[in-house]
Length: 404
Ligand code: HEM
Image (cartoon, rainbow, N blue to C red):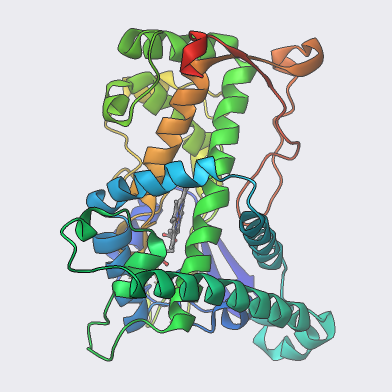
């Protein structure tokens, strides 16, 4: 579909064939990502997510080989457990407030971003002052964390033989990264921007996906029973789920794929823009054409899916070759190719593990004896695609008491 967003030629893609054209065949032409007013103010242009230049390439490399490598994700396990045990900390609440404010900021439509000649309307909108204030709070909070890590680092014995085995967190990894051009370490501004970028891109997407998966299972007790039977067969009922057994749960994986199809946490991929004119599927597109891949519409496309408006994990059991790793263009929850989500390995681990724990450890019901089929399944538009109504459910332990 072609539309004009202000002065910008825009193509909206909602079929796997066209997604492949733009994300694979012509991805070298659609390389540019236009930073918005919000990212310019909040991140000073020094982060991933919106940019596409040398710093973006460097940061992506750090994500792929450092932060989200198998070794690093494994080492974060200790940090995850520590954080779970220290829940409710004041710092965590402060950080949550900042992340909530970032989400609210991203939901603002700034007219000048779509119609550059109307930049002055943005000034009248009065959005910039609160963004600068938020940026100040983000900077102050991140600086405290960086200073704390530097102090800890200064008192650590790096020659100690156990040093390399000590758990490191995201900040430790970023502080130790050197830029390829040997201009030195990443600047504090860049680390701060990457940190918030990871938080904004990683927290809501993961929790929204989990909420939708649980809502669909609560709404359809037969599917919940199927998932529980599979978990009981693999783990029994006298131990809890472990990371190492997740690959033996095809029904759970099919349920997560179906959740990605029906409720994609990112309704749209981040828009890309062409640097020069090009021909795509017989159409001539001028330079600076923007392309937006609509994952929500693709998941409901009746040319692709047999029963698009029905939540049924079976379709992925029948087609196990359809994967979420970016090679099956009908299911692209994390995007595809050079632009795809660098946090995918962490996200898929956390979602599978959390859903398996919730379903295996508890039976679930809706409060006040509400009938499952009456559960409200409407969504609301935002940076991610959350439920319009919060999900309330009652958990009933189903494993021996000593396991809780
Ligand atoms: C269910 C969970 C998640 C989903 C569905 C998801 C989805 C996406 C999508 C669709 C994109 C844009 C890809 C494109 O435009 O082609 C993206 C980008 C990104 N995601 Fe995720 N994501 C998830 C979790 C995470 C996590 C856990 C992290 C990190 C902690 C993360 C970090 C990022 C970053 C940094 C980018 C920007 C990449 C770039 O600009 O090159 N995401 N994600």
